[in-house]
Length: 156
Image 1 (cartoon, rainbow, N blue to C red):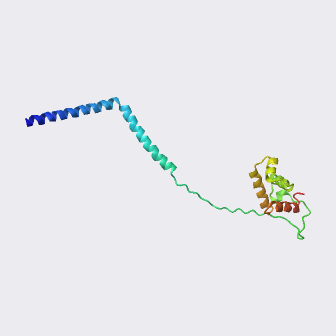
Image 2: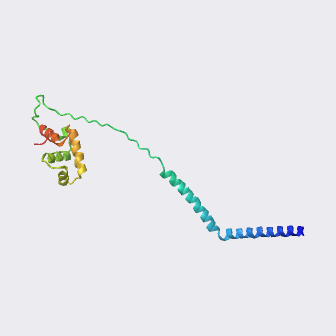
C-alpha cells in the first residue's frame, strides 16, 4: 500500500508539472508580445532614469575670472592750465556719436529717464553710455563730466 501511494503521488506530481509546463508555454505563445514589450519597457525605463540622472546631476563648475582692461586716453592740455584754443574732437577722446549725443543731453539737464525717452533707448543703455563717458573724461559724476567736456570744448 505504501508503494502504491508513492507511485500514485509521483505520477500526480509529474502530471502537475506537465500541466504547469503546458500552461507556461501556452502563456508564452499567446502573450509573448505583451511579455516582451513589458520587459523592453522596463529596460528602457531603467536606462532612461539612469541617463537622466547622469545628465542632470552634473556638478556645475563656475569659473570666475577677473579681467582688467586698461585704456589710456591722452588729452592735450596747455601748460598754462587754461582750456585749449582749438576744439577737441570726440574721436581724439574715443567718444562715439551716440555718447556725444548723450553728453549733450546731459549738459542740457535731462535725467537718464528723459534721455532714454528722447533717444528711444533703454535706461540701461543710457547708463552704460554715461558710464563710458565718465571713464573717457576721467570723471566720477555727471557734473564733472559736463565741466570737463566744456573745458575741452566738446560742448558749449
